[in-house]
Image 1 (spheres, rainbow, N blue to C red):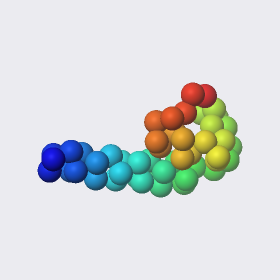
Image 2: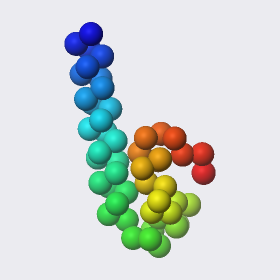
Image 3: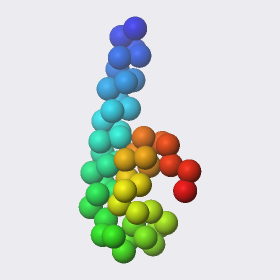
Length: 50
């Protein structure tokens, strides 16, 4: 149970870090990698099917 809680916290931190990193990209940079600013949350959550 403790291990699953720790893994949940790690996953949350990873998502937040990914959101922060992708949010720093300009709209042009996001477009260059095939993303739109509205895709950031789905990409960070692993739910993007571009």
